[in-house]
Length: 366
Length: 232
Image (cartoon, rainbow over all chains, first blue to last red; front, top):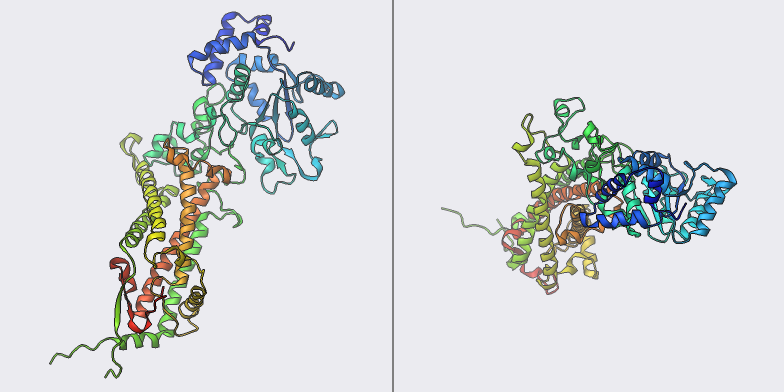
């Protein structure tokens, strides 16, 4: 089946040409392509044999897969899951045991430089990687072996992109994001989970153009991660106006003011939640009245508490914000300065008197 | 009553115009940046009922912060330039204890002025070595604030200049972490201001040489017999 194109498979499944073209329009728009590129999308979907896909799961909770299943356009999930030939996915494959492992090795052997490797989860590097093994092989070995001949490597979610919860302090298994293990380019699609439509768009981009999308400094597709949640948030006008929710149950919360003071991480989080939203464009956390927790940012789990604007200051134990540390340092300084001033008047009395005696005598008025 | 003749004092032009200008522009910038920066971290509840379209005060506070950040940066660069072309009191060497005489001065300041275990020591003309070191720290923290601040600003600016700092945030991992450090470093400036102003008053009070006014007019006073060609 790996030689058939997406259109051929859709036709086999009974989708009409119109359904197919609608799907292409949707895929093009979602990937941020302009109308001129539409023809290219149709052509690729129609003619290009879909690439084999290997989807690996390491230390993760499968929320990325769950998110992927909820892509807005039903055909997207259908196409990607059913028709992208998902040759190996521990969660979704029918095969098991030796048969499943044989699938993986066959794909790597038969399609070198053609298959797309999607990785969900971080890789434990401590103690020889014994904390995550599949079929007797460590996650690290499987990853390195699978990535060697992959056409492209995608890190699904925060686990694979930045370690996520597994890598939170004290990181007992030394959970490591895959871009730190592999040498080649990795497309990071962070989020816990990433937005389904963002995931499908990345796959679509690989399929249509046959190359990696434009990435930022952290390996994230610029299309979806170049703006902060804050920049596209519908509550942004309240931020600029200085109108904030002060308490979860106050009048301002009811009015839908900005959640900045409640610890919303929107201003420091790069993601497309405000634009694509979730669950077929229904809503996103801020719209539901809860601040963003910054799940697509590095170390978001360590930068808590989530309901406080500034994270705790590292190195000063729990419950110490930069301001508490600063206030103590500032108060100590004021106290020190005051003590020094008193000391000066005692210890330097003689010097001060001498200086005063140096003063030139003014002629007395008679 | 005064048996000794009053010693002869000479007037010395220590702080040149660009140094004084730098000082006051820097002081203004730091003050404005601390106030606006603190407000950005902890916005006040100023209004209760209006609609968002009726006001823009928080946006304005942020604008002032960014505008003064630019001023702070270019003022800083001007001073850096002046430390190579200005007089010997403004020279970059006065900020680092490179020479033996400077290290002696450092010990003198520590024992005479800070710990006060010695009554008298040599008094420098420009800033003393400990002050020089504290300014050097201020420069370092200033650079840190410029890097982290413009690093955070890069993502929301289209200007090529802010774009030059886009590499900073990945070093810290995320915007959130960078922001915590940027905010925490503000307290260095607050502590610095307290100590700096106190120490100026201290020297003026104990030594009576016009230390405080020197940063306004540029002049300091020194006894004729104490002025040496290598004084700093």
